[in-house]
Image (tube, rainbow, N blue to C red):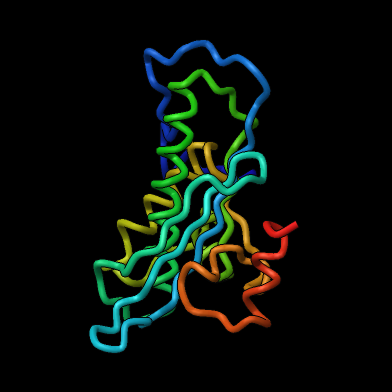
Length: 180
């Protein structure tokens, strides 16, 4: 755990004021996210993919072209991380409003180590101003304690098929757990 209090004083997860009392078995949420930099050959816009899981079961998928043109893979992954953060925070809010107890922080998993490191280490600084909003959105969610951002190997990133077409050799390992 890092000390975020100087950078994001008062950062706390938004809790619904009128949420019902949680009942039942706690649910663990995790989200895998990825981007395919400059995927669109015509516009060079990147694609974001995300898969949100509740207790290991996929419940939400997201695959869309990004609204901005990013000049680097890092920037595209940062935008994907912000989108995944927003999806995860929204799911946590919905679950709470339905009275579902949550099992700790949600796990947000991406395969770009630079992006993950810069958003999890308070000492990290951003050099490109145009990425600042996505950067601070993810960092503040981590600082609030609602999300834990982690790195996952590219071959293990379950959101990879959401960003690009994969051949059968690469696609099958992602889908094999659903086909049992």
